[in-house]
Image (cartoon, rainbow, N blue to C red; front, side):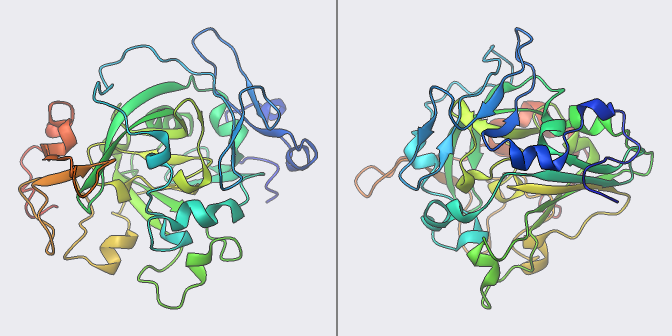
Length: 330
């Protein structure tokens, strides 16, 4: 099956972008979803307002709604420089500075996502076709790493539920799994013989978690397209779970009846559970989860705060886990 055509799709053939158009239109990155005014703005490399960081990566402005929502944190946002230079993205190395240093090697044009499994309308879709029908929103979320540090980030994206509904999940779809790009030629961490993860990186959610309105697919942050080191061009954001659940640079989404085997759970099942909800009462075997370092911080200003159950989103998500022992299903 050619990657130019989606299988059994509700997207009109006239809306599906041939791959050669991606290659020929070098200025085109991808189209945003419709904003509140109904505009559909293409991302271009030459747009006014583009910025280039010190790693040579360009970001383009986004058209999105910044209206107040029940899902918006009013806490002080982490400075852009910290959010883009202190990252975990093991595909580029294990040091926090490695993603920014090496992620420019990752090609994100063209980009496609395979939708498969327990859906009625599977296919491989160009990023433009994934994003186009959706109105982009700003969601200011807390991000809590399992390593006990945290940030507050203004993401730009759209609800994952809206995307999944387009492909009509079957009654057997109990879980949603995601895969990160696997391209060792551009992702130096995937070439290492000493890594703890079997590539590609895989994460998963229960279907009700995936359909929850807090769960989004992000295409941007701080009002512009995602930098490579933060998971460009498409990543998951699940704010009540530890950060490693918010998988980056997604190339595959598949729905399944069985709980998927996920990368960190396979690597260290006693340390990283499938659910990985933020829980200050369940410590990591090697450190406490009761508090966290809010970035930026320093030796003289540790900026340590108490960790909240479900990362502060307990009111919205506790009902998902009614009757579950969260010390067992961690």
